[in-house]
Image (cartoon, rainbow, N blue to C red):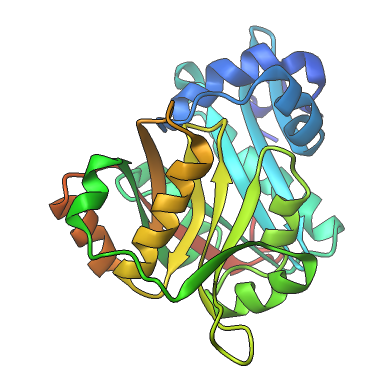
Length: 280
């Protein structure tokens, strides 16, 4: 431990940390508002880590163990203490914490242009695995998309559906189970009602309080994407004039939404790697 490390005490998050969490959350540079105090206390605080020093909190992180995969959902270092190795110390601590929970792999999302963060994470063994774009679109933008497909039926995602959906769209095992356990999330699937066996045409996690936001979001075609997007606006009601949608590994759909006028709000990479003793 270096001289700069000794000033930081790493501790679990607490419900009363909401105010400082909400302030640092803004450093993520996303459109989503900071989660409310009740959501923080019920869904996030228990899986968070804070670095506290003589002048207060310098960083926080949120993690989730998904079976043998550890996901770093958020990591924020306050601007005033960046460049001092605190991010690396936090990541090393998280690596030990996740290994203790049985994780052998880990990953996170990072902005494509965040060069210092990419350098840190790749030095710890992570490599790009998927890419995504977050776009803001309005109801009017949908008119420029191909007509909605008529073959699909919207259904709530049941516990039995989560495994097939995970396989169909290449998601991390356990991710949908994690989201389904949170009151602020609503999982909806688009299924081919005419197929003799359930065939998935798309899915979305509707987070009404976060922007609103659709993430994850997958569709087998642009027509099915429009079906999902129209259903999302219907679920949100007339008061919602726009929403953000995270499109993963689907460059044609991203181009189509941009051509329709949707604004690109964020471009990210999902990094994954082995969680070994070298991740320190």
